[in-house]
Structures are given as structure tokens and as C-alpha cells.
Image (cartoon, rainbow, N blue to C red; front, side, top):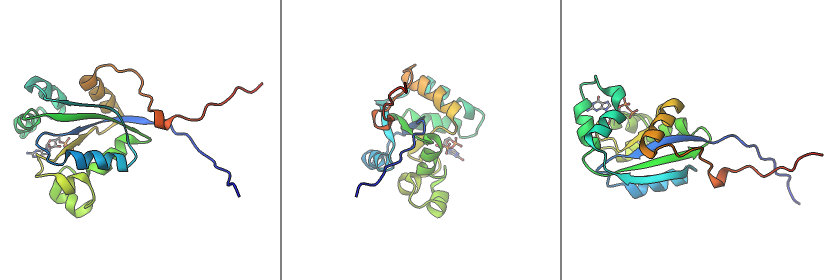
Length: 162
Ligand code: GDP
């Protein structure tokens, strides 16, 4: 017997994810992204200039680790991604786990940082911390790409009632 299928549509959200330089685990990270149901709406590999890395992490300008962080981010190619999913910002943060892999291995052993980060600086992945930052950093990295409409998340078309 056919079961009645009820589907709800929640508007998808975008976040900026970065696979940071020197990650030997890019393929595994991309697999995990797909396994967790994120749509990859944009992807590019790019080497950030010092200037771009400083701008990207400008919120951390006053931190003691700022210059180390900038060195790390422009040391090699980054994979830049726009990930789209319902609640993408929060879900990608959860997928990454805590900043420090020692803590990640204790509290979120399945997370990407628990699995792939080297230390608190070289922690494999970045993700926007809120939707405002996500929009701002997506524009900064990809330019103004307009509204992102992932084809897997489209609601069924509805006919107008007469
Ligand atoms: P995130 O949002 O989890 O990436 O963490 P933050 O926004 O606080 O920090 C940005 C990035 O700076 C982190 O992902 C690390 O690469 C680096 N970082 C953060 N905290 C430290 C620290 O205490 N020491 C060092 N060396 N790097 C850090």
C-alpha cells in the first residue's frame, strides 16, 4: 500500500567552508561533506595572498596567533566551498568540531577536527560562525554570486489555485 508522503520545505542556508592548506585529507573531508547531506554549491581551489588572508581573518587581527594564522592560510592552496543545507552554518560548525583537536577528540570524536587536525592552529577546516559572516565571506571569496539555489533542495512546484 502506498504511504502518503508528507514533505516539509525549509529554506536552505549557505555557509562558507574552507579546507585549509596542507590537509592530506581533502578527499575524506569532501566525502564527509556529502555524507552529511550538504550540497556543494560552489567550489574552488585558491592560494590566498597575504593581504587576502589578513582580510579574511580580520576579526582576529589583535590575537597573538594572528601572524601564524596568516602564514598558515597562505602557505598553499585552500579549497573554498559554499555549502548549502537547512541550518548549514550550525551544522557545518558541528561537523568540524571544536577549534582545538585535543578538545575535539574528547567531546566530538567523530568530528573533522578530531580526525584530521594537526593542532589548534593547523586544524584542517574553517566554517563561518554565523549567517552574517557567512554572507560576507562568501562574497569576499566568490564575489557576488547572487542567490544560491541548489537543485537538490527545490520544493515541488505548486499550481495556482483557481
Ligand atoms: P574557529 O572558528 O573554530 O576556526 O576558531 P577561531 O575563530 O577562534 O580561530 C580562527 C583560527 O585561528 C582557528 O581555526 C585556528 O586556525 C586559529 N587559532 C584559534 N585559536 C588559536 C590558538 O589559541 N593558537 C593558535 N596558534 N591558533 C589558534
